[in-house]
Image (cartoon, rainbow, N blue to C red; front, side, top):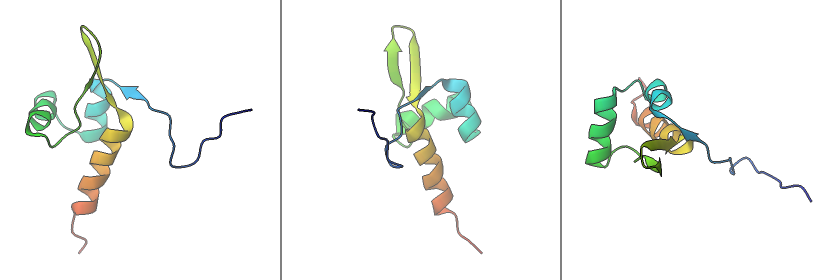
Length: 72
């Protein structure tokens, strides 16, 4: 039996820092500053010298900022 994916169930995808920067237009230091402040999704440790972010969390963060803007 094949697995069925509904629209709300997306496969988890890890993305590296350059992709996070592309999605957010933030600098590396600003990303880490916001992680420290608890206002940006934290990275996931993939190994001793490798981290990544969960793409859905980064996109949700972007969506939340877009939702906060005031429409004139």
